Amino acid sequence: MGRASKTQNELKRIAIVSEPINLTPMEGIRKFGIELSKAFEIGNEFAVSRIGFSEANSKKGGKLSKINEIIGCRRRLKDIDPDVMIYIPSSPRIMMNLLKFYLWKGKSKNRVLILLQPPKGTAPFASRILKGVKLFRQFDLSMLPQSLQYETWRIIPSGVNTEDFKPVSKDEKNRLRIQFGFAPSDRIAVSVGHLTEGRNLDLVMKIAKSIDAKTVFVCGEFQWNDPEIKERLRASGVIVFDKYLEKIQDIYSISDCYIFPTRYSGSAIGMPLSILEALSCNIPVVSTKFGVVQEIIDRAVGISFFDDDEKAIELVRKTISEARNNDAREMALNYSWDKVMSVIMSELNRH
Image (tube, rainbow, N blue to C red):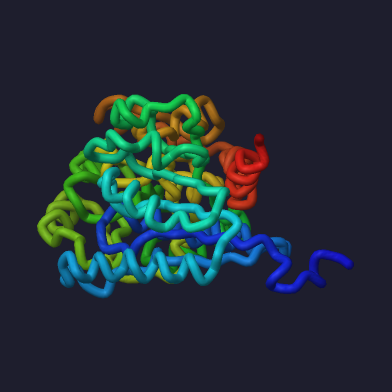
């Protein structure tokens, strides 16, 4: 019989686990986990359970609430009895993460730990907990505590849904520009993220003042957006979209250039999804040398890196002024979510 005839009990059981999320950089972690679980579900080969990744209902609740979450997750994992347990922490606190990982492991022999941001703190007992665990990271090995700097860590990229994020025709680009209040002839530079100090948004303000183009920042309706930063952006000439957008790909599609200004490692996951989404829409990217982005896609067509603000302004100005065919999407096609899944599975299949 073919794959489609398998019963739920015959499928390999995958549990992908995180915590309820209410911190700014963790939107990328939530999306990473959700998209990865969808990739496992394709093909009717795995029975996937996703635990956590929802937005936290409240920042309140204290220690008792957190203990209940840990116990509840352990019970769910015991009921599921997964063949593979993948943990993607939403907090950088490594000691607490490892304790939870130990409590949740159950009978599963195939365990995976994915760190999308550099951890904080120390973990002197890590070698015992992580014995036999497949380890993945999205940052430089030197950013791990000394007790965790194993050679077995592998870099894992982020993925992008290349069907949702794809180039549009010139006519569609012009239609979208008019829909968002721009003229078809406008030059537009776009950045997407949260309104927090760690995003280095002073650079976006400098760019708006320095280039002959519209500069757009999309922050959405998030409770942690800083209203003071929003006003500073607008005072600098940045057009701020602070409402929910159902199709964020439309924002990439109206642009001539995507800017990723973030420097602080705690403000985004190590391979930001927005960079891949822009490239998949065939939009050239100007970025800091953030996380593992340069390590993974250095010298790729469609992305330029900068070390300082003046270079950033120069690159944005050059990118939006050049009328040229761009092959950025070709690079993005190498990072579909099923390929991220295959990185994990190939490591699990190694003996």
